[in-house]
Image (cartoon, rainbow, N blue to C red; front, side, top):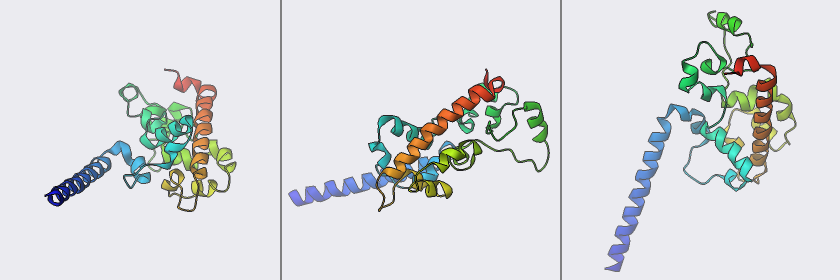
Length: 193
């Protein structure tokens, strides 16, 4: 009787877990806001960055979950969608695109003009505003920034300690701070709402 009961419990637990994981996968993959998250999170498991200091954990959680101030996220808000042409509405990088909104709007009408979106991969890997910060990263973390396999920035490989993840978090802390200073000092007319 006890063996039968134990096997029923085991069966229910197994199928409950499978059902949950399937539901998690479907809802995660069908949410457009989670494009970046889906590129770095492939398995349901605890993440190593959760053991970092609170401020570093917060920065990584923000970039992973699109709870940040990059224009890819700000452009989702009604406040910006109602406005006229703006860097936020168009989700453009404030550093890589001209701050002259009239010129930018005219350029955007050209057939081969490619505007630079301020999304997570651009912020982490490409934007020249943060190149010196990327270059100062220790060797354990910098090669990870040079490759497009972003999930390795947030999860150490089997032979790594937590240090590359910590270095990614420190980079995020400095890059977000620099972005805030740049917006405040270099483009105040664009960002004064």
